[in-house]
Image (cartoon, rainbow, N blue to C red):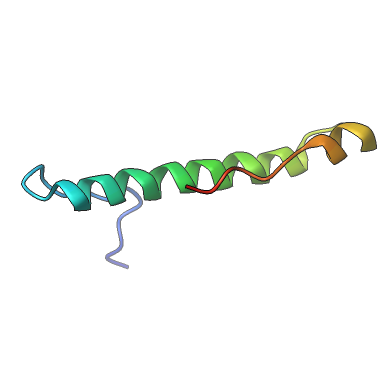
Length: 56
């Protein structure tokens, strides 16, 4: 298993790749937070109010 848990970011000599890497990390964090919400206690009313994260 050679895959690292932490993705290495590209260098600043590739600005578009850096931006894409940053956006991918943010999407992963949002997915984790959204999954966490499913495990938190709450009423049906508060669960209905929840919205999925915005797409860029």
